Image (cartoon, rainbow, N blue to C red):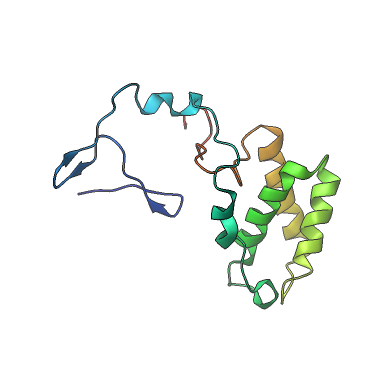
Length: 137
């Protein structure tokens, strides 16, 4: 049977079928997901593994771009403007065993700031809907 992989993991949702029956909506539908409130600060400790434990060993090809994106995404909630976020990104990039080129760090920060400005930054908000609240084109 075909399955959807969302956010790096398996998602079980209606109308998924299992050996003992099937999942079903009791009320509403998938179309209601963008209108659900974001869960705030749910089990904050769950994201501890989202930040690499050996940041200083990260080099090209070891996931450092994604690691920086995730960390900057979480920190963006505490930044007042883009310059502050960019400073955070550059500071963290300097901690890599092999730092990225500044142009790439700027692109990461710009992408995160755009998401944050548009209200789409869900980093650190567990249980949040991770896709934009509009239909994909």
